[in-house]
Image (cartoon, one colour):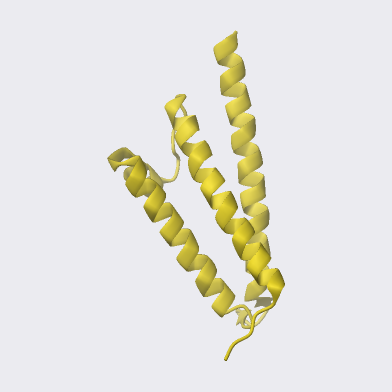
Amino acid sequence: MDWHGAHLLAVSIGILILNVADALLTVELLSRGAVEVNPIMAALIDGSPAIFATMKMAMTGLSVLLLVILGCYRFMRVLRVELILYGVLIAYLVLIGHEINMLQRLVGSAIL
């Protein structure tokens, strides 16, 4: 039986919460005229926002689950896989900050 530390649970939950925030901010930005630059997500969101959200949550959830399962292994014999989870968490924090900044600029320019 595998036993994973509580820190991986906290990081995983953080990633999933930030994933939801990213989806909401993305939909809000797109409704204000922004453009989705990820071609896969752009195709999904053009079809249906519900399908976009479902696929985004499913892909992220499965990816996080796989990274937790493989957390004790090393990627290319160098980097522990669990460290990749921390990198994803940091990347999501930077992305959310960027999206909030973009939203503030779009709202600010709409007011003027």
